[in-house]
Image 1 (cartoon, helix red, strand yellow):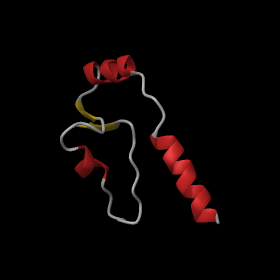
Image 2: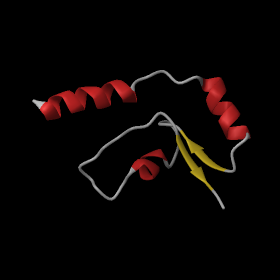
Image 3: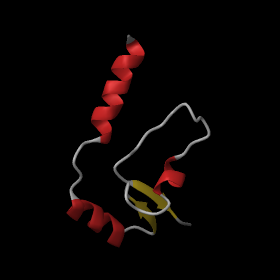
Length: 65
């Protein structure tokens, strides 16, 4: 039962609309890579060491030095 509720919450969070202007503003003022689900490298960037966790964030920001 608890895992079912968790799955529902994760699905809800992953499908929130994103303000594209805010993402573009982030990209212009950010030193590094900003990825969204349709971008090349998104799936690789969202992967973590624990393969049981499969999150799909709306935006991934990967800063550089």
